[in-house]
Each structure stands twice: as C-alpha cells, then as structure tokens.
Length: 161
Image (cartoon, rainbow, N blue to C red; front, side, top):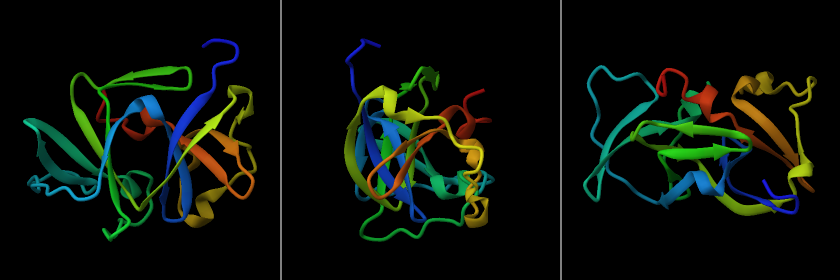
C-alpha cells in the first residue's frame, strides 16, 4: 500500500452494530433479490439467486455473526461480494463462488488513513449483545460510533475451505 493511500469502506448496520467492508471487496448492492431456498442448507444460507446468469449464495449475515436472524424490511440490502477480495492486508479468494450478504441497512462510504485503523481492544466485549468479536478484524473509531471491519476469512470459515 502506498504511503499516502487512503482506505475506503462501505459501511452497513446489523442489529445496531456498524460494520465496514473494503470498497474493493464489494461488487454491487441490491434492494430486493428473490432467492430460491436450498433444501438441507445451513440456517444462515437464505438461498440461491440467479443474477444475470451467475448463481449467488445469499447469506443472512446476522446469523453468521451469531446474532438473531435479520428481518427483511425497506432498509435491508444485499451486498454482493467480489470473488477476490482484500481486507486490509489479507487477500481472500472464493474460488469463483459469489456470495451476497443480507444486511439491515447500508451506511456511507468512509475514507480513512490506514494509520487510524486499530486492533480490537481486549476490553471490547460485545458478547453481552450477542456479537462474537472473533469476527471483527480491526476497528475504526468515528466521531459517534465504532466501525468494525469484518474478518471475512473467519466469518466464511467452512465456506472458503
């Protein structure tokens, strides 16, 4: 990464928590997508979508984060991920599989200096709210919130192996 290169994150909310994904990991964002349920799929797999001839696996991100299932409403969105992603210093390849993440609400695009990204503090314990911190790679302190950068490799463990 170049010395003065900033990072940009697409932000979104799940159960009141603010999360971010590197903007270059996001392929597109959709309001409504009709999916087909998959028999015997794990609980977090909502189903499959045929999007312009490509099959996507739609995931309930709340369940992957071990929170309660998301209720789809007018603010809900589906974030379609690229098959090759970079999360900070880590490259992730899905071997051609395309995933879509159901989120409660899309936020803003945040641009920041890499030096402002911090490790997850040991005293940050969101388990009281149900969130397992193992799925958080780093954090970014904002004026009125903390954005948690998802650890997609951990989140998709079992899918990307």
